[in-house]
Image (cartoon, rainbow, N blue to C red; front, top):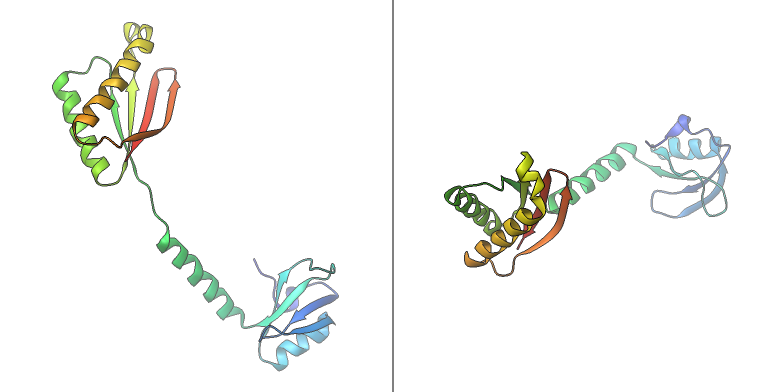
Length: 171
C-alpha cells in the first residue's frame, strides 16, 4: 500500500511535481508544506530512487487510486479466460457411452473450450493392464475426434499419475 503525507518517515525525498517536473531533493517537512500549498497529497512512489533517495510525488491520492483501479479493471476485461471441461472415462466403458461422451467433447471443442479426458483405473485387473488399455483409449479418442471433423486438434499436456491418466485437448 502507498504511504502518504505524515506516514512517510524518511528525512529526505526526491520530489516530483504534479506536471511531472523534478522539484529536487527536499526534506520531508518542505515536501509536506509544498503538498499542502498545492492542496495535494505527498505520495511515496519508491523507497529507493536512482541516487538512493526515496521518490515521492505531489498528487491527489484519491484520483491516483481511482486511476490504478480503472487500469486493473480494463486489463481484466481484455484478458481471455480459458475454460477446461473434464470428461472422465473408465477402460471398460460401453461403446454407446463412449460415443456420447465424445459427442459432448466435440461440442466443447467447437465452442473453443479445452477438454480434459481423464481415464480412471480402479479395479485390480484395470490397474494391471493400464499401460496397454490407456494407450488404446487415447488412440481411440484421437481417431473418433478426427472422424468428427477436428483434424487440427492437439493435446497440450499428458499426465500418468497412478490410477488417473489424463490429456488436455484443444483446437
